[in-house]
Image (tube, rainbow, N blue to C red; front, side, top):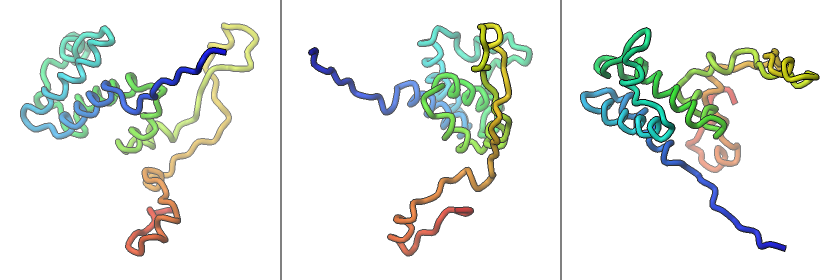
Length: 165
C-alpha cells in the first residue's frame, strides 16, 4: 500500500488578496488609489491570459479609458472589480459572502433558481436551462447578517443577537 501524501489546503489565494486590495482601493476612490488597486486586478487578468482592464474596455460599447470619476462603492469600476472577483473565485464559496457584503442579496438571491435538465435522456435536452422547483427567498435586511451563537450571546451580557434572530 502506498503512503498517503497530504497536501496543505489553501485557505487564501494570492489572487484573492489582489482582488481584495483592488476592491478596497477602488471603493476608497481617492486620487491614485484606483490605479494602484487596478494594477493588482490586472495581474490576476494577466495570469489568466486576459488583457488589462483599460485595454480590454477601450473598445467596448461604453469605453473605459481611465478610472477618473468612475470609482467609489457604486462606481462603474467597482462593478468591474466585482465581476472579476465573481469569475476568479467561482466555486470557491466567496460569492455567498461577497453578495451579502455588497448588499446585493435581493438581486442575486431573490430570484428563481435555474439549472440544467438532469432528467434529460440526451445531451441536447440536458443542456436546456430549466427552472428548479425550489422556493428561494432572501429576507433583506435580516439575512445580510448571520445569527450569533446563543452561547456567545449568553456569555457576554453586553452582546445582543442580530436583528431578526
